[in-house]
Image (cartoon, rainbow, N blue to C red; front, side, top):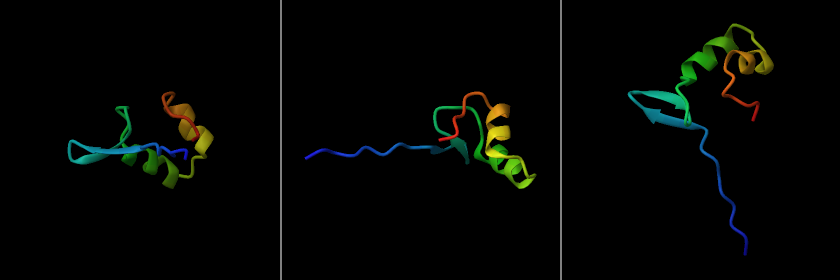
Length: 52
């Protein structure tokens, strides 16, 4: 039987939430989203991110 591995996208560290294995805070992503930026525009602001 095959096992399915899940990927962790968010980490809790230093009293905040961060994109896993980066120095990008989740708050900075959400702030841009609420300003109306598209996923593609947000991704351009943070080259380490993927649209996944």
